[in-house]
Length: 175
Ligand SMILES: Nc1ncnc2c1ncn2[C@@H]1O[C@H](COP(=O)(O)OP(=O)(O)OP(=O)(O)O)[C@@H](O)[C@H]1O
Ligand SMILES: [Mg+2]
Image 1 (cartoon, rainbow, N blue to C red):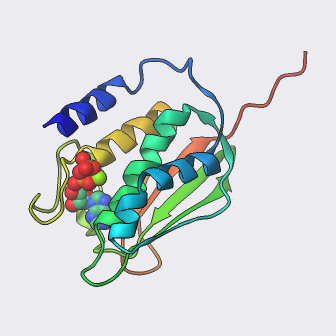
Image 2 (cartoon, rainbow, N blue to C red; image 1 turned 30 degrees about the vertical axis):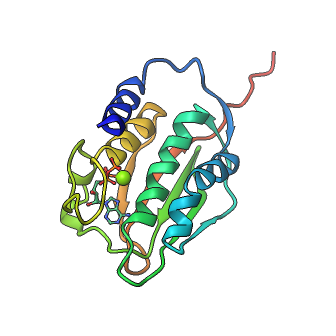
């Protein structure tokens, strides 16, 4: 119950102001999220592989919550007997960065690709995989608040692949 209330509060707070936006080292943010997930990772005997990540323009704590939820899902929804491997990678996309979080878990059927981003929508019973169904809705709200978009994409193999865009740091205009 307390977790649900905290999650809902976090959800409702996203988008209040962009005052906290700075240039954020996404690699450091990913490392911090991975540290928060260390117990879950060790319990599942999993791996979190973070590639070279860019500096983006945004709110560091929201971006950490974003990666925490996506990497956390990758660790949680693993196949029986298959240790989770979650990869976080980025590549430039015009003026933006495109970030991919991919896992080797149970995957998401393409027909549910939009539904999973709706708050409280879950594809599994809570007795099978714990959770309240807020994580991806929060992820979507955070990405859209940064001016980006997020979606499920076809990955290279089994497992789920989520891709989102974030703005690159703003160029300083010479005075
Ligand atoms: N990486 C993934 N692999 C397989 N299914 C996933 C994955 N990520 C999300 N899902 C499916 O989408 C649903 C919604 O995800 P979301 O993160 O919003 O909720 P949750 O993880 O169940 O709960 P919470 O994030 O609030 O703890 C999940 O319940 C699960 O059915
Ligand atoms: Mg989740």
